[in-house]
Length: 52
Length: 254
Image (cartoon, chains in turn cyan, blue):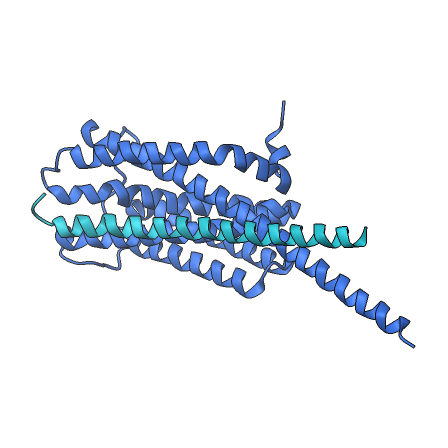
């Protein structure tokens, strides 16, 4: 690739950064949500243990 | 035999996503690897030269930008007709993905336009209708962020989505209805594709990779939305219980 190589590379970079960024954001959010939910479940089970 | 509507239940969807996501993600990566290999080993175009390689990401991004809107419109009907929570989650989460693919389509198109047309942008019917689609996505994201998870917010976003669907046939037929600088359809057209087979197969593999990638990300985003709503419900319940406990304590106090 010689001519216009910078346009081609920039196009592919934009594509990978944008879609990759979206994928990463979704994956990190999933991790955060699972962490928060498991904390809630732990709290709930420890409360029910206190009640017992 | 299980009906497809059986999966239209948040808990069943979570189980379905847990099983299908690793396969769908793996398939996306495999198709992407094959597609990229094809895109960089296909012959250069006799007129466009190496710049034609931008087509292998630009065209799938454009198809997926439209596909995401079709998914959103179907989900919007599910929200308005059946008030289904899964349709609501699907409609809400598709907007961000659609916006990302539309953005990629617009930027890669501009980067192709500069060396080929001598300009990054022209107010051509195809380009303008695609920009309108991008603005529609941004508008829908803004509506959802402003109105949280209220049924009213879901209804307004669904009505906006259905009204905005008018842009989809305009994008598709803009190159036939008006004189545009953008080239007419060269794959899905009466009389078959006009692209050489050596360039067509990498394009189709890349389009398939983009579709499976979209489905993977969409399922992941719907799963997040379901978990987020569960978390919101749990924290609301915890607040109610706390308030009730305080009330009981106050009543019991002498």
